[in-house]
Image (cartoon, rainbow over all chains, first blue to last red):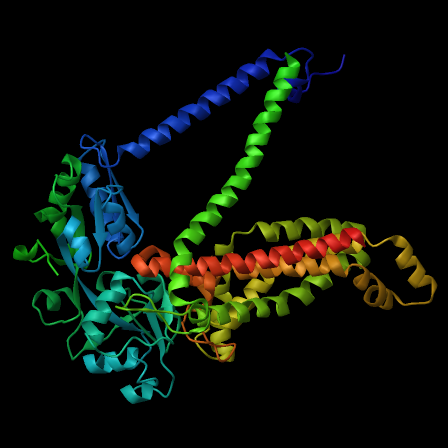
Length: 304
Length: 286
């Protein structure tokens, strides 16, 4: 007699007759699929529900790492509750908050007038924009005017800034980015020159930093909270980019990080608890440790 | 009972098959519905040939000329890198390689096709970008870097289809050429490649479509600069990489303009696919 091979046990379809086992198995698979589908549906309808044990916070990629850290700390204190953070960009986050697809939106740009009609912005912290270069770059200080002319493309060589004779590689963010919007407002100014169209564009703080890390003649701007030792933040008008200088009002390139909620109607207990945690002492302290500047007490209701 | 079951399964498969066509129809409808209005408003020439893209400003400017040129340069560059290399591998594998080697090459090519594009981009960023920056100048993020990596990415398309069509050339052609005293090289260059040209043409067009449509790897390596590239070492941007880069943050007219960019891309890809189909049909008739 031929020895039984294990492979044969699993092939009931080859046995004559209708194959009851196979049919039962396909029914099982079908049932499992149906369950999965229902589960997914239930998961979708959960967002925005007031008795939810899970909320979605979506928006700015600049705010995301900080919101994630706070969510982890928050969830450690509130077992069984889930705060999902999604970094999808300021505008997308704002759009997702309007219909309630997200419970809280994150934005690193000020809200536009039509958005303010439906949404309420809350400043959770201040962030400074650091203008960064490669650590080997001898240039340490630029005036705001020089930064403006560099990013407008009017100054194209480091020699003009007291550095070596080398062309400047400009690294910019993409149109619509909250960080870019803040940079335009703070550095280029209203009616100022446009940002050079020749600049390299990168889609996140991290990738701007990566380009500057690798290119000795590059210059870019990122959130102060994500400056690493592989790049160097320039002094602007002689003022070092530091949290202390931001809270003292000496460093000028500062923007708010916003949480956005729907006007009218409360955000639900879990969302409220998370908001309170972020704005409370503990949340603000850990934001400060992460390199941000705590929200000024009286300005927690930010208006453009 | 069994007949009923057969019929039911047949119907179910029909529904599934139709859903594929439905998916295509839905995608087409939504892209055109979201993107066409702004093209009509701006006029097709202004949209296509204007090179100023300043979408986020008041009364912004929406010209995708620089991106179209960027796509064109990068795709051409990818073909310059990928076609000779791919054709050489196809010829070697189909005609010259011993059987064991070509059974090794085929799965390797399939593996190459299976590598996610973000990995290609990552390797390009880590290896090629610094190399170009130190040896050739410029920021390294450039048309050249993107073109080289895309050239490698389209190899599987070019190799597999070209090889198949080379293998499909009737043995009589090969034997006839050799019998007339042609060398092996003369046989390949003068007889086999011309006989397989429609398949090779289709492979090139499919590779072109892949290069044109690639997004992630290009975003990582091209620098995404909105200038019209004046040299291979300049950073530039492509139609796809700009959509990928900006979609997350776009709203209002900016978003519409990105969908309109998608319409243009859609049209490009459709034309390429039709061309590839025409090529392969000619092959069947030949």
